Image (cartoon, rainbow, N blue to C red; front, top):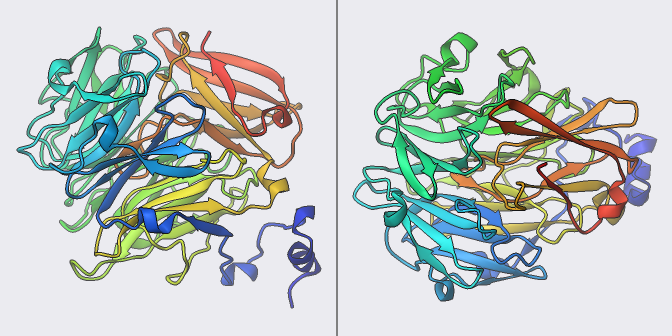
Length: 502
C-alpha cells in the first residue's frame, strides 16, 4: 500500500507534502508532468544542437537549433510562442552542417552573438554578429575564426586569461583542438599543436575552476578509445594535463568507447563543482572532494550505466533544491537508432533514481538537451534534440509543476561591469541565514551536447526564506567574491535577479 504521505501528495499536491522516494518507491518510476509545445512546428528531422539566449534583449529566452543540411533556426520567443525568424535575420537555411552552437557577446556591445562550427573538415565555421537584434552578419573571416580543418563539436566562449573579454575554444572530432585569444576583437590562435590544443578526438569540453585558483580549467571528453583530459590552467598562458594523476582520464577503452559530453554541477550541494561525463560505455560522475581531487561515484550513485550516451545537463526540474540530470542516449543498429534517455532524479544528494521508461513521452532525444525556463514561471522546461531517423525533431516540453512549487525558485543573471553577458564560468552560491550552503551553479561554458547557453542560472528552493547570494568571479588576482545578503526570492517571481560585477 502507498504510504499516507504519498496518498496526501496525490490528493493535495499544492500542500507539497511529497517526500523523497523510499527504496520501495524507487522500483516504480514516476514520470514528471510535462506538456509538448508546438510539436508540429518542431518535428523536423536531423536536429542536433540547441542553445538559448535573449538575442533581441526583450527579456525572454530565444532558441537556436542546428540541423543536418545546414539550417540554423532561430526561434523568437513571443510570450511563449516560438516563431522561426532565422531566414529573415540572415541565418542559413541550407549548406554545411553545423554543430557547436554557442552564444557569447564577443565584442561587448550588449548584443549576444552566435558561433556555429562546421562538422566537415572542408567547411568553415561561422560567427554571426548580432546587429542590434535586427539581423546577423557572418564575420568569421574578419575575426580570424573560420577554424579550418575541423569537425566541430563543442565550441565555448570563455575568458581563459581573465582579461575581461571572451576567447574561443574549439573542440575537434578529427584533429587538434584550438584556443583563440581575443585581442581587441581579433582572434589569435594560442599554442597551436601543443598543450591545450589537444590532438585527441574531442567531443565534449567543459571549463570550470576545479582547483579554485581563479583560472578556468578545461575537461575534454574524448572519443574512439582515447583517454580524457583535464587541462589545468596555470594562469601564465600554459596548461598541464592532470587527468591521469586525478583519475579522470578513463584509460583502457575500446575503439568503440569514449567520452561524448560533459556537464558541471554541484549535485550534493557541498559547494564544490562536480563533473558528469556521458560515455559510449559506462557513464562517469566525478565527485569533487574539495581539495583538488575527484572520486568517480557513478555506480554507487545510480548513474553509472552502460549506454550510448551523447548529451547531459543538470537542472532542478522539481524545485526541491537538488539538481537533477537529463542524459540523451540511443540504441539500435545504424540508421535505425532509437532514443534511450535517462532523467535521473536527485534523491537529496544521496543517489539518483531513473524516472523515464522507453515508453515515456520525454524519451525522444539522441543529441542535444537543455533545461530552460522559457516562460519565466519558475519551473525548468526541457528542450531536447533528435537527430537520427525521419522521426526526429527539436522537442520542447513545458514543465507542468504545480504553481506553488514552480514559484519556489530563484533566477540569477550575471553581467560584467558594463552590463553585458560575458562572464561564462562565474559561480553562484546560495546560503541560508545560518550560513549553511544551499546550492551552487556555474554560468554555462558548454554542456547539453555541442552548445553553450547565455541564460540565467536557476535555483530550486526548499523554502522562500531569504538567502545570501555569493558570486565568484574569475580575475587576474584570483577568485573575487561578491555577496548580496538578505535576498528575498519572492521579489523576483517572473523575473531574474541581475548581478553586475563590481
